[in-house]
Image 1 (cartoon, each protein chain N blue to C red):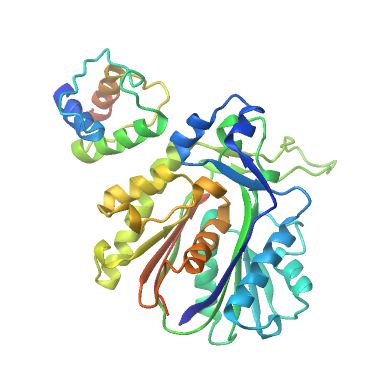
Image 2: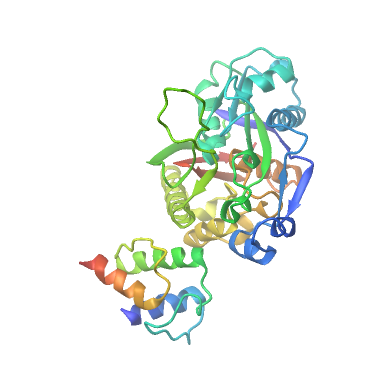
Length: 72
Length: 315
């Protein structure tokens, strides 16, 4: 999952060297609220997983958890 | 079939820069600009919405080279006119001194495109139809709410349509969701009502609106292109509702088209609701950016959640 998110984020940020972990926050990635929606839309398209928009999603770890829940 | 023969716009005198809002609520120019593309907006002080709508209408008539007496129908797209009744369209008809069918429609920010579709349906009976998009969001936003008060401005845009074969495609639509973006009607004083009083300010779920806008606008554009057997490359100008420059960018990147095909003026006017498309169209025509033979796609989207899509080959 992290590998897939890394690829999507690298594409979104146009940064091939971007590294993330579950502890990485969106703030550290300099993503604002609309970036997060756009990112979620890209994730949904790439993975086919529907991610419920939630203000509590502020870091990669929570995003992964929400995606895993959505898959069930 | 219809064609547009004249456009016009009218903005209030008073402009408000982001820096002025930063003195009123906890926000800043950089924050607003980076998230919305907005730097300025115009708000009514002495003017009311009828003044703006009339001004835009008179400019459109002048550019169409016809007199007010030649107008046979007035359609006003607005969220809220100066009165609950009579309609803003009747207020404009009174100012213009003409007698004809005149009515308002409310399809929020898609209203102007809805107006075009209604005009298309009526054009066999009425030769010249005046369509106005006019809104005064300064009445409907909570000026203490930094999330919404920075987004909107007041304004009006208008066009005159007549019979012609410029219009190639038009489709209004609504995917009902009334909780994403709304302003409740103000409460009255009925002694029988159990309704909770409401100030009637605009409420918006910003992230949901962004997602709806980008997804549905791209989808409506693709539907139009498929119907016309065209590709995005065949469209010269995508005139999108000006709600947020990030939405325009989101749609553009999905269609993989260059920025110059997606004109914006949101930096100057902010979101003027039903007025954004006719205002932008008028500016483009005034600056000779739209030429005869150009294919123009206009797309509105807004509360409802409504969309309206139209393709014209300019004449």
